[in-house]
Every structure is written in structure tokens, then in C-alpha cells.
Amino acid sequence: MLTIIKFLSQKQVYGTLIIIAVTYILYKLIYSLIDKIVIKGKNELEIKKRKTIVQLFKNISRYILIILMTLILLNLYGVNTTSLIAGLGIAGAVLGLALQDALKDIFNGLSIIFDNYFVVGDLVDYNGFVGTVTDFGLKSTKIQNITGEVYNISNRNIDKIINISQQKATVTLEIPTAYEEKYEKVEKVLINTIEQIKNDNKDVKKVEYLGIEKLDNSSINYAIRFTCTRGTQWDLKRLFLKEIKLAYEKNKIKIPYNQLEVHNGNKI
Image 1 (tube, rainbow, N blue to C red):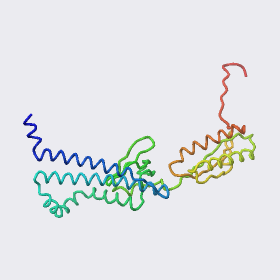
Image 2 (image 1 turned 60 degrees about the horizontal axis):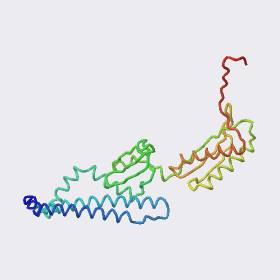
Image 3 (image 1 turned 90 degrees about the vertical axis):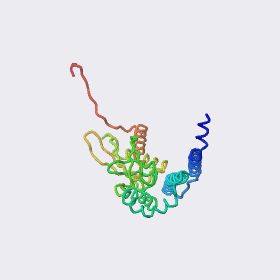
Image 4 (image 1 turned 90 degrees about the horizontal axis):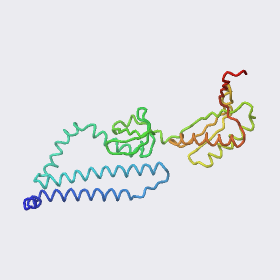
């Protein structure tokens, strides 16, 4: 027991524990204060940008705390940190050559923020991998696709990332309708339905009734087109199809489908 007490009473031992504990508390305190920052903006893009800056500050604060803790621990164990810091000027050139990729990641990480390249929540395309930016740091960016897969991209590859979130998406739908339905009736129902969807949904920026798109084998295909906020097009496509189906049922407009007759060997 005395041996344990003697060991813990050493300056290096209890000092190390105190430094680690204080660093951890500061880490949690800084993160808590950053999380409490009220993120407001004039528009959605500005709000996303501020969220990304908050995320960046979290990452920077973590690196700073680790560096400070390391320097204090070295000083505790008798390392002359003043000389060490002064010597970094000489070693900087060597480290710079060894850590070129890491430095590129850091500088590009800052460029992403200041040049509005993308922000947390944006939809991006990286070599065909389309997903949402979920996390952003000084060295790398994480994007997650619709199936949950996560891609960790080094910030030095910024030139390969295409931001498709700050543009609008355009979707064209063909609605198959029975030949016997009156053109004027179908047109009226479609126009009323799509206009109602636009009025009820702020993500729909523009909607158009295009008319007859195709005279198919068993149907007349009417076309509509809508423009919406990027990333919402899949949900809106399903919404348009659902509401048009309900409107057709309400107005007794037929949607044709293939049918198969089975006679079981009986005479026709």
C-alpha cells in the first residue's frame, strides 16, 4: 500500500493524471460551448455554412488541446519545450516535405470553408459516389449515401468533388392514361393536381404540364415536369405519383395495365 502511495505521490505521476484530467474537462467544456452556439442565417446555405464552421472549430480545438497537453507533459518530464519550439523552425522544412499531403488537406479544408465549396448537409458527387456531407474536418470530409455507406475523402481531393446540392433538380414524369379518356378532362385534372402540390410544398420551385409525350401501344402518356431543391427530388417524385393516382381515382380516369386471360382448357 505504501509503495502505491509513494508511486502516486511522484510529481510526474500525479502531474500526468491532473494534466490529462484537465485537458479532458476543457475538451468537454469547449465542445459544450460550441454546441450551444445558436446557428442562424438569412438562408439555408448560410445556416449550413455556419454549421460547418462550428464543426471545423471543434476539430481545431481538439488538435490545439492535444498539442498543449503534449508540451506540458514534456515539460513535466524535464524536456526543454522552449528549445523544442525554437528548433521547430529548422525542422519545419523537413516536416513540411514529409507531410505535404497532410498540409494540402489542411489548406484545402480552409479553402472549402472560405470559398463556399460545400458545407455540412450538401449533396456531393465524388467519382460517382453520391452522398450527403455528414462530417467536415481539417484533413478529411465524410459523405454518406442513401444506403448508409460512408466515404472518407481527403480534402486534397477537393477538385474531384462536385457539389450538386446548391443547384436545383429537374424531374420529368410520364403518366400513362387510357385512350378512351377525354383529353380536356385529363389535362384539367393533371394541372390542378400538380399546382396543388406546388402550393403545399416549399421545395417545389416550378411545375409544368407539358401535354402528350407519347402515344404508346395501350396508353397515352402525359408528361409533367417539376423543379425542386436538390436532394428532395426522390421524395417529391413519389409524392407526385401518389397524388396523381388519387386524383385519377377520384375523377374516374383509368390507368391502363396489362391483363392475362387463363382458360384452363375450356372452349372459348
